Image (tube, rainbow, N blue to C red; front, side):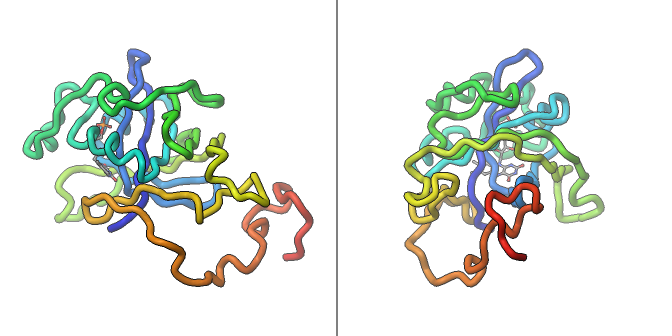
Length: 211
Ligand SMILES: Cc1cc2nc3c(=O)[nH]c(=O)nc-3n(C[C@H](O)[C@H](O)[C@H](O)COP(=O)(O)O)c2cc1C
């Protein structure tokens, strides 16, 4: 519909890295639900290794993301993807012109150029769309828990380096299969009026807040 793009890095069975763009992701606290076609190499890798990195590209990485479109790390190309012109690519980092850097808590590498990199572990997997006659090939909803967060200094708030500043962060958005960015701030948000710490369990709060 119109959601931020995520570049998922995962490890292939031979130890090389796979990298795949996707955008059907939603977030709750330190967790994320990924909507992926079951035939993706990424799904195979996450289910086998229990790990991935969710790299969030900004508008600046649109060219790299687009070069990864219509590619798969699966060889041969799964039959559901051949009519759309997908091709197998062994080195997706190389194709995209992106740089793998070692992660801290998981084995798959992070993407250096992406301003946000979230190291993650598999939490749960669900079949998605079972019995839906309009869904052409099987899908998975994969829940991952974020175990390490990396954010580049230039998108952090001046008054709190522990927070991303939405005025500085320009996520790449896929809207109806086209690439978009963000315009300026539109309206005051009432949801931002109470302390964000209230979202956390009490033992993870940095400062005492009254609930
Ligand atoms: C910007 C963008 C967003 C995409 N979003 C999704 C998505 O949300 N879910 C999905 O299954 N595929 C999505 N795709 C297609 C995947 O990239 C495609 O299935 C790819 O083959 C996965 O790579 P892999 O097989 O190496 O894992 C998207 C592609 C692009 C370019």
